[in-house]
Amino acid sequence: MYIFGKNVAIEALNNNKQINKALIADNFSEKDIVSELHRRNIKVIEVSRKELDRKVSGLHQGIVLDVPDYKYASLDELLNKDDSLVVILDHLEDPHNFGAIIRTCEAAGVDGIIIPEDRSVEVNGTVIKTSVGTAEKMKIVRVSNLVNTMKILKKEGYWIFGTDMQGEDYTKLDYRGKTAIVCGNEGSGMSRLVEENCDFIASIPMKGTVNSLNASVATAIILFEAVKIRSSK
Image (tube, rainbow, N blue to C red; front, side, top):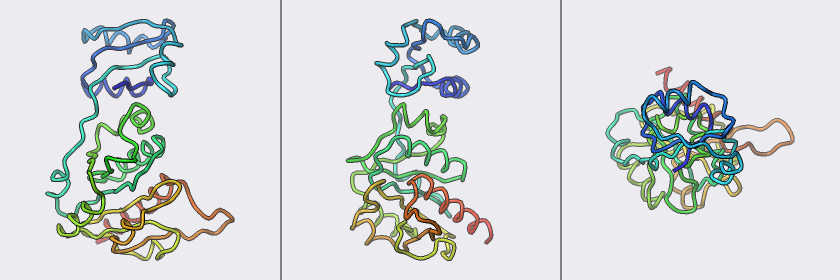
């Protein structure tokens, strides 16, 4: 897997992440990063910026790292904690939204994120760059069936909160205890079966002419309300 960008490279080095090799532009100016790569005996290859453009589809800032593929967590790792808070992404497709949500979840102290294996963005270089490296600190679980996973969570004592424009005011709900918050697809929202298996539907009241928010923004608003409620017990 390729990850890219100066901050991502610094984060990878600071966390002693395994790096197979580093591709840098021939005019790359961050000498501290290059010196650290050499100090760790990581192979550094100078290439043209056009070559880096072909490797990744994002702002690489002159550096691309070849690293092992992201290691997903298991569902059991999320279930063995009391008072757990998790986020479920219902077939999110935009890697920038995914990265932003990961960053928000890490900042809010979320215990993990659950995504489906099919028709969903996976953890890739763009996600890691958008998350500013926080994807490496977050437990992310891929499951074959979201609805079945929700049923498992319910058996473990979780309350599941969906997000939709037609629901209860998100500030009026009680997010204490084991809680899972569902974020729907950017265009179509939650699927019918996922929505039917939610215990509550949280809605953000809209005052202006816009009738919906970006998926990552809506998730952040509801998530930090949940954190506030949970800390007040």
